[in-house]
Length: 214
Length: 214
Image 1 (cartoon, rainbow over the protein chains, first blue to last red):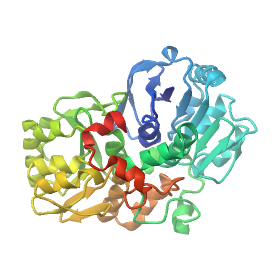
Image 2 (image 1 turned 120 degrees about the horizontal axis):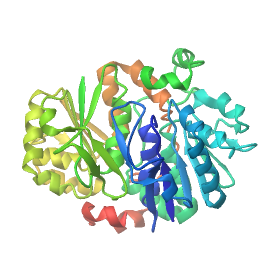
Image 3 (image 1 turned 30 degrees about the vertical axis):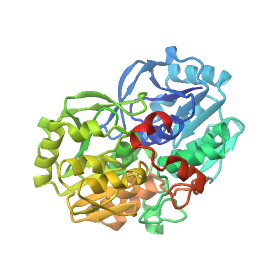
């Protein structure tokens, strides 16, 4: 099973690495970080680069496609090579997945039309404008399309998907070995739970400004 | 505030990137991925490389030191350059931190002697052998030393630390913007919670075998 993780300039590191860490442990998985060209790809914060080991053209038929988000996902959304690769890969993929605003990139490639999907809580209307039906859920399955909410939700998405692919016991084993027993010190991880004045401060802010202001 | 994330061959990607994603959003933070030499550093799974932008010698006095774990952390534990850098950086650091078996690397450098600390649940005895007092907690503060349990716990550690450094409201904002509202599909993330037969299967297995078997 080949898992392709798409990288592009300005991606959010945890969007890619959270699910990578889980899905990469699938029995027999070959995980490949891909980009337009092989080489280092720098993230939204600018202080981290992941290496794309292969070019998109080298990985035409992955079984799983994973698209991370990023505050400036618009560039990837509008990139003809990325769109063409996503459309072609999706024709034969078993699962086409995204984290955070990665769903906007899938949507821009025309892959989420009339599908239930999710994205970062600040980007629901952008997702709707691309023809999808945004939900408030953290992880959304619609057939083979699996989308996750903001940044950290990719870990939950990957664990769900791991269970579907390899069974509950194998997924529980990965949860145990990665000690995924979350205990955040605050309960502010969604707009429903965070203090209202913090949510209000960010409502209406475009996700593109999050890299510098967040 | 300079945050140095130590990379070494065989590190676990999420150990580094989970806390990076949170701490990198500290106001005024300069986050630097460091290794013995600049360049790509490949992880435990072998399918991902993060770029070290600076050599250890270029970053002698970081404010925050972050050491990720990895199943073959022994090489980093025994590396004279890494030990010397950790000891010297620790002399002036504000916080010295680790995730998973990263605490074994801190311990091998002599930094956790008689300190309360934690590590991956399979490595508690190794940590004890290095002079620390392992606890069952997910995140342990002992003075400026902050250690986290296995892999995913670095996110919780970083959020705790973010709150200490920048205040609760700033930390809650980061939790909201990274949508860290965990909803794992299983409740198997610790040896106390996972099915007993899964825990029994892994007890006594060295962490060094996790890269290939996990």
